[in-house]
Length: 492
Ligand code: GLU
Ligand code: ZN
Image (cartoon, rainbow, N blue to C red):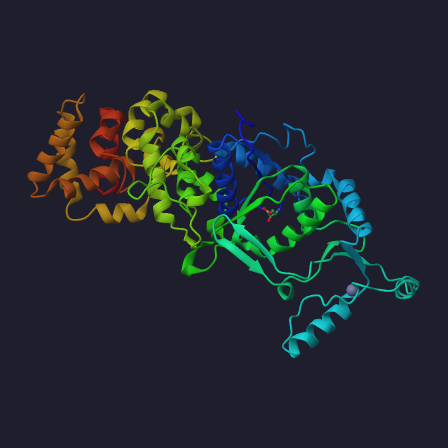
């Protein structure tokens, strides 16, 4: 149960676009840490950017978390003591905090126009000086303010950074120090009064009493600003203490470039559609910056939770390796209970994946073939092509497979194979193998060469599940009819 420990972590995505694997890794590490410490997992939606946020993306986030099995103790749809958990419903709260920061002098109004800011930034750059905000409006006089207001300028609100360095101990990277030149005063409210991420994120972390902020390394540069803001919130009695921060390493994709959320390989939906198991995907993603043990890469989610500690996260960039992700997923497919496997494949045996008439689906044949598939699939979506020969009236027509398999004298081979198969014991895959083996021998062919034309005649494909088990399940009558059809096609 939650709340057995003081640990409170949060997963706080913005609902823009499709969820990507980097985001899932962040959710997973927070969740595993919460579960390991018997703490509380807070799920918060950072939807303060009406131009980019969408309801569709919000629904996808919730659906993805549920599919992955990453549950939350406080958040959307379940509520909690700090509700609401959608920032779009908390706007008054942020404006109130911004006003308090202004009143206490922790923030000030900045009247600089974008053009003026740009011009000064250019000049600073040209002079080789730090190019962040130069503090021009830090100490305006009453007259200067009146003059700007008379001009009709609309100020933004800026947070006043302290003039001394900011130091904090990152849970992954150790002690880090940022000097004031590198962290200029920053905007917290737009001119129209809309609060920015820079304000709402730490304010909510404070109000929601978050103890550990675990997030991607791309957010490291915002941490000194947030630490300073936190100090101001403590000063105002809004925050109790500064949370601990842990920045998870970058995930590198192809060509050792940072995996971008726009990279197709980063899309969570892609893995879902290909038939990754949630536990397979989570197992793989947990290895991006963490390891279970030196000699074990495959483990259950419960084993991960039992072993997970943020102190063991590695600061080095992690490489996203699709082949390894697939291999781990394949292992998780093998680990499923056979019944669970047969059910997990179900979506790929139905529209829109099934390439057969749904009325021809045969449950008994499916149950018979499923165990042969379970030991061979890498992703569940491959099931459709592996079993379609059972449910289609005719095997798929694939010219490339046909040309590849029908070499030498396929008519002679298929004719003999048909003869031997028709006299074989159809209750035994071994007997069917003997029949094809014998047919091959009589034409001087090894089993591999002899079975290729039979496989293509019967399944339409050159690769698939173990052939003789497949024939047994398809049955004598249909197998022989397909060999006859192939012989016909070969002009025999
Ligand atoms: N909404 C922010 C994002 O998705 C959250 C960052 C954070 O964890 O502080 O980037
Ligand atoms: Zn200014």
